[in-house]
Length: 311
Image 1 (cartoon, rainbow, N blue to C red):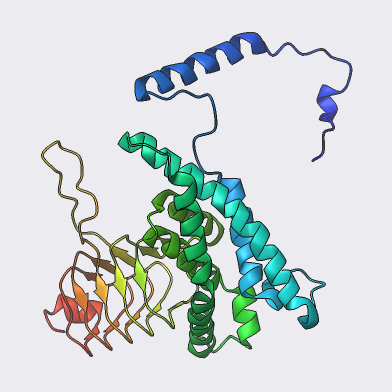
Image 2 (cartoon, helix red, strand yellow; image 1 turned 120 degrees about the vertical axis):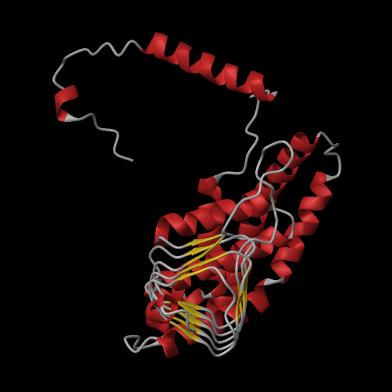
């Protein structure tokens, strides 16, 4: 970090920022917020976004050592690097898992006495999924290479394509989501969202050989179910049509409200697909289509077809 003052502030002029008052007012705001929500504020209560960014970067290196690992790595030392990095990274993940479990216990007002053992078990189970996850990611990379005539190699795809970055993050986040760690999963998903412009909720279920081309503006909702060999283009939305409130007026959580996309579907740029509808196997959805009804397998849906009531 560069600790040098800006030139205008280093000319011998003593500034009075009136920090005492500002610090006091910020303390009052914090205390008011914590009092309303029953928080103590004594220790950090939440997982760290910065720590999770480092954990995901390390896991990318573990999964693809010679391409996403350190630049001086050689094949002869891959296993040592993977083992050493994985041990360090799982220790770091364990701390974040424990923070989420303790946070959940506070929200649910339940004892947290067994959270240390539970956190260890969850991290062990997550680690055991990594070999299978690597194989699925290989299918995603291959699908991107085969689906984009501009791609010169699978290495270029892995190193450069935002859709691959997003799906790596998603598959890691989805494993944590399924393990009952939705906050960690959501933070990881939003790291990918910030880096790529692709917004995939960690709850979405996505089959192998998945490819997002270009990617910017793609949105995939929490309860979306996507089959195998599916290809999406930029600005595609797989979203909800409506959000029914419960008796207390709060939107109901977890209802199946996003599309089911079956195998071998292609959805072109700007298409908006809303609600718990099914896009049948092998269908093609044209660009900028607005779709709120199910589509039969093998269909070809275009704007013109929808305007004329066909398709």
